Amino acid sequence: MLKTMLNGASHRVNIEKFLEENAPIIDKTIEKYIPRKFNKKSILFDINPPRYGCNLETINKAIADPIWDMLDRGGKRWRPALFLLICEALGKNAQDYIDFSIIPEVVHNGTLVIDDIEDSSDVRRGKPCTYKIVGIDIAVNAGNAMYYLPLLTLMEKNTKLSAEKLRDVYQIYVQEMINLSVGQAMDIAWHRNLANADDICEEDYMQMCAYKTGTLARMAAKLAAAIADAQPQLIEKLGHFAESIGVAFQMQDDILDLTGKDFAQKKGGLGGDITEGKRSLLVIRTLKTANQKDRNRLIEILNMHTSDQAIRDEAIEIIVKNNAVDYVKNKASSIVEESWKEVDKSLSASKGKEKLKAFAEFLIKRNT
Image 1: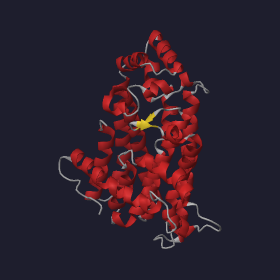
Image 2 (image 1 turned 180 degrees about the vertical axis):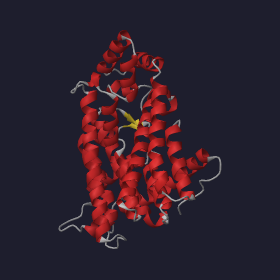
Image 3 (image 1 turned 30 degrees about the vertical axis):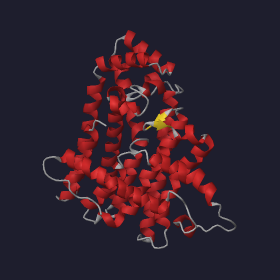
Image 4 (image 1 turned 90 degrees about the horizontal axis):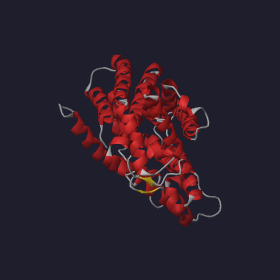
């Protein structure tokens, strides 16, 4: 049963508890469609029965096992939580739509599997990256499968959605998946220094984030709003609001990568983004405001792709002393506040609306 205890002054504590208590509910819902072990009665085979044979061992070892290895590593499950809170803010019983909330969450974890290969990463959530455990071939295939398997929720024979609503949902999904690929292409090109990475402006970065890190939050919000019968204009406003949450969440991730010891430890130490040569807003701001000596040194370190902690710490010191951390924190807060104003005018006063706002505030102020 969906927990709805977000009220009172201690929004942060309540939202943390909300996420903690609902994460296993989300995981149980994912298991309904992507079981830890597929069998002949799994929904996958009910929708798409095999014509010849059904070798379950191969499917389980090459799809189910790597998928659940990633999902079991944790994560806040905040994208499905956002989906459910938007349903509630629109006056719906969120529990009725929980199956659809897993779509952006499973896709998100699929992107992590693929991203780690593209970035040649070593650690994800405190463990070796999936491709380090199962090999690149299985990891690529499992990650790609995670883009599509959650769509089984839309293909069930007893789906609750009308043909018109299904059309709208599929359109949102396809549009956002295209955006995701475009954003990832921009990010890769920059950290591989293929496209004048040192001259990226803030607007370029914001657009990349809107495409990449804003996409799955925007997908969650637009899917929820469409399924909950919102009008097109409100669907777009809620999508923009969620996009801003996703972008701000990424900005906070970037800050924690440089300053949050517990957070960064799960990724192999402070400054993993420095090793990748990532052109985050922290870097862009520093390159704009730093003196020439610091600017040249930061670019040099980013292009080294070093894992040497002492050198990474040198880059972090340059970023911090140029006040980029405070600038990015303020930027994250401002974009969420501005996008909330659009939603605030369009949603009727309710506890669901209050929870939605508190949820956004929590995500951009978290420390983990």
